[in-house]
Length: 166
Ligand code: SME
Image 1 (cartoon, protein in one colour):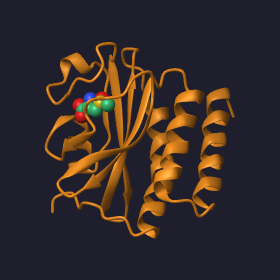
Image 2 (spheres, helix red, strand yellow; image 1 turned 180 degrees about the vertical axis):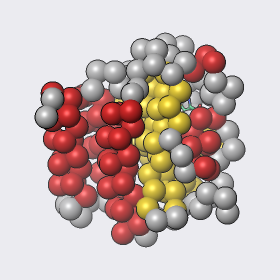
Image 3 (cartoon, protein in one colour; image 1 turned 135 degrees about the vertical axis):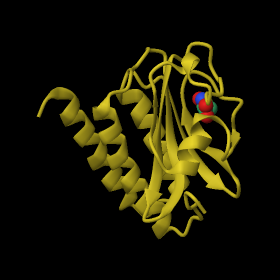
């Protein structure tokens, strides 16, 4: 396995330990955002938004500064698009995407991966990067595996999700 592949696997192993630890979802989310930001230099700002009613609320984040977007309606932003469709949004240049809600002037690209289990979308990991086109298919695969683990935990802890198309 190459360097980044081994690092991705180490993160997934850590997340397996966290999800087996009987900690509340919010605490696991806080550990995950801290770990991701500390471990991957192209992840400039990392947040976990969770579905609450018709919107998303920021449950955990790590980065150089807080965002003003603590709540995002399901129909707004790249974040709302990913949660309402259940699909990954990989935006190579945020200034060219009309869905984009600006947080930080320095952000150039953004990756949003839904946290899902079965039919339900429980939330998402949102990553901003100061690099243009920072996220490749390997980031998408890695974060999908990570979000699968978080989705199973959200379902096991009885969190309420949203069904795309419902
Ligand atoms: N850019 C996001 C809003 C959240 S911030 O990036 C932290 C969006 O377009 O939904």
